[in-house]
Image 1 (spheres, one colour):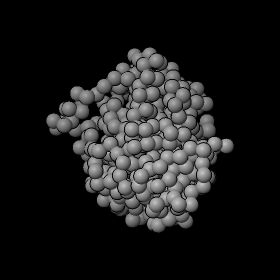
Image 2 (cartoon, one colour; image 1 turned 180 degrees about the horizontal axis):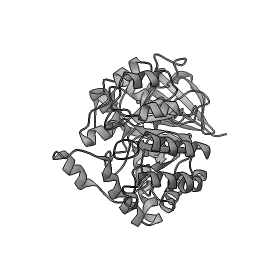
Image 3 (cartoon, one colour; image 1 turned 90 degrees about the horizontal axis):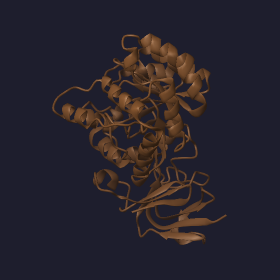
Image 4 (cartoon, one colour; image 1 turned 90 degrees about the vertical axis):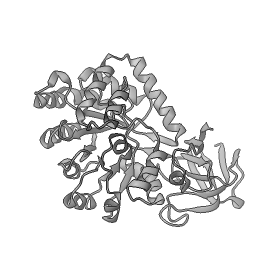
Length: 391
């Protein structure tokens, strides 16, 4: 099989403590060899075996590719005016999603696919080599089905967000919408998805409604995840733990019982600082979660209403500045943490046997991701051992 060597790496983040220092498994003056789409060798640059293709990196830092475990890319339309209104003092509420539902339903399949392709390419340029993608802006059988089908052309990590908010035709009839989603939407869409998700929040779906949707998804072979505790403390975290969800996402408002439940579960707490930045909301207390031993992931939450960014480097900088994470913790959360949230053991690390997804920075160390916020530091990106982007 053809091999590719990355040599003269200034600082390598392996995320394998057996290969280097600390939780990030840091190695200096390192090299990595890819073969057949996986990591075949890691060691000192001076000892790197010969390879068919070589990339001498001149002391740049190399990290695993970012694992984006929370995005909403299948949509149409624009909510820039809503954003401007929030910046002028209006408070965010879940109802703005209905604007995007109307635009998405009116869009052609070609328009939706072009938008997904554009945002996937943008994600790659900011270092994300795996991107989970949700539906949720159709909220009818027809439109959710085409949304998961479009998403599936670009990622294996497709989520049916069957219950985002009740669409306009179900105003005042939320239970009727839930019954339809369980009986019709989920059976039709499940063959095209891996995950089932729900927005468990005031203005969206309550605990019993969310439980019904997630249970129906599980019955059709989907794995649960939950949008929970974004706008206020609520039942989302506890519901996620009860159902063994892979992750509960946002986790902005939690109490001691929520923290204890997460600490005694395998559910990942996925923090989405871009959403709190764009809504002027409170940031999650990542320090409290980490100190309790909870596995934390970072996601960009790209969506047109509350976090129109694909940049995990931006989210890393926010997490360090405003969520009391160390730079090492934030980088781990955006790589290995995202992999845990997707229950993937082959992603988020540069260790023999892992998928050969990596990025090189125009910087000597991963610390520059938080140290130089807003600067486009991603120099090159490899996906499955192939150079997929070069600045």
